[in-house]
Length: 362
Image (tube, rainbow, N blue to C red; front, side, top):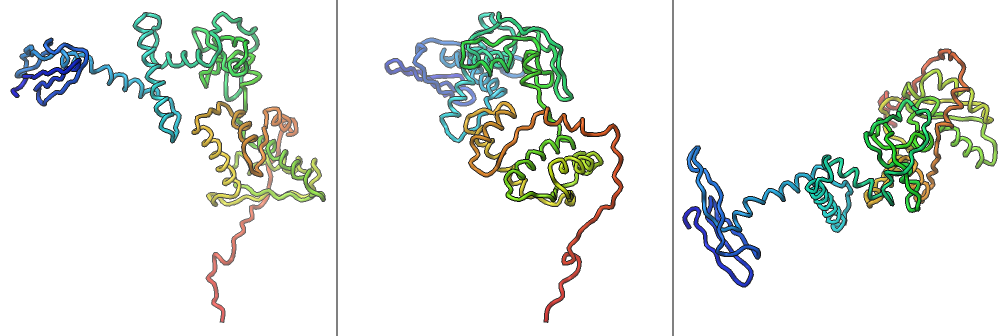
């Protein structure tokens, strides 16, 4: 066919059209009339545009085909990151993303929403995880804003949003979670001031004080299961200065174990980049178990959730201890105002067989 010519045929309610553009465009429709015509503008030369007559099914396709491309583009920006090997889960989350965007378009068209698509997803998620919309719920009484070195509770929202801790604690009950304009500044999570101080505040300390807060439960468990008393403690670790190889750790090492009945204590540092040990294998197994749980479609929203899941599901000899910030604070009172530096020699043990060649035996 010549360019911009077309042929149309019909059978029952189906209309088949072949239109010659640069290439042949084939359209099958059960909506359009076979004799109806439409038009589009095509460029001839550099600046001249002319109107081209074509079947109406082709012209409608030309005018509205960008909707699917725009949908794919917007859905790809904020996908639900739930990886799964099951095909039906991938299909479910895709349809859920499409439904979310279609509802956003409907709300914008009706003038009921003026925000962006990302804000729409956040508001929709909060509405779905709570039993009711609690915009009229009373806010918690004002209290001094608690703050830590890691997280701060401040007024970060213009309109009130559902408190994350109240939503989780009251899920499945008839109680309505309250809304607030306060939240965690670093995480951008809505939280009541009281919820932030009681349930959400945590510590990320891993300095010398936190080291002994984690070692002490291990020593207590070790001494409680031994038939005879253990009086000598040997610690083997790598040598980071902020955690182990410093004067504060030496002071605690010469104090804490002796209050528990130990008489001799040594701390042995391995060389830098000296390879992985048994504890790294245990940590890898624990992390892999948590990753598999999340990949199966479950959620672990906080360190407490990870601890409770692993403590109940790990069918191994690995034991888990939950350390609160209150467990670390007593070691502040144990330290004197000034800790004197430790003057000592650093011993380096090297196997002779690795330095000298082996002498063959006769």
